[in-house]
Length: 148
Image 1 (cartoon, rainbow, N blue to C red):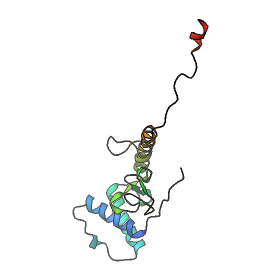
Image 2: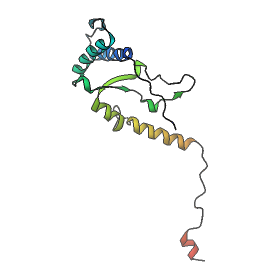
Image 3: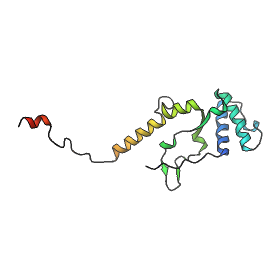
Image 4: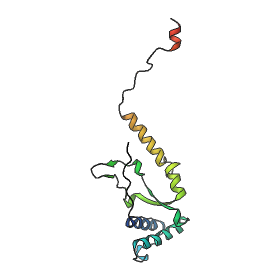
């Protein structure tokens, strides 16, 4: 299976995700408190505030897709995932170690990690594909041949 397209996330979406996440963390956060500046500067201000809330450095913040792109269905007509890859509702900033743990070790709460969920979905798809398995055994066992 060929790798699917992974679009880059525009600065406007990155700022929007940071604003939404800050609004969830802080009850007093107002997006108007961040001055209207160029997007790159606005992003730095938002990420500084978010890093302080999470308790990490700005360099450690990474965007995470929920659900992961490998676990989303691909819409060939729209040439995008369902939900879309850059949908701000399905993006969240995590520090690098939490992102790595959620991707490889375990998911949120008691869920599977993103990669484990991918392996599970592939196995389910393979089992449901309706392939005819060959009859087993194809030849007689060695112990039954000796008796003759």
